[in-house]
Length: 133
Image (cartoon, rainbow, N blue to C red; front, side, top):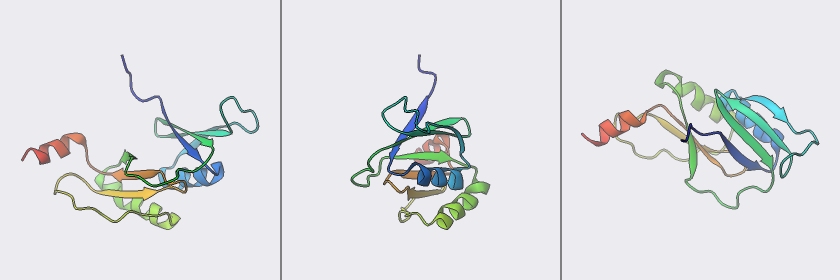
């Protein structure tokens, strides 16, 4: 039986730039750096965002941007703080899309390697309730 997601891995050109990105926006904590001991395919760093294990490995950036993304949920009263962090880091933010009232707030933004992230203040239950009205 599946217990949940073990970890999420991102391939990035510069591990230290990704560290800055994760720490600045998500308050990520670095818990491992290979520092020349490559047990995997390349140099890597592991982070925790809350209880979520994020692995980063050195490699080529994505060739193009897509809408594939990972969304992190925050409370409504924290949303503007996270949006400010993203803006202060100066990363690319996608234009807002239209939303139905009651499905939460979102901001979509890219890291330095074309991975798309989202900060979202809603829940699946809220969205389904709104869509079923």
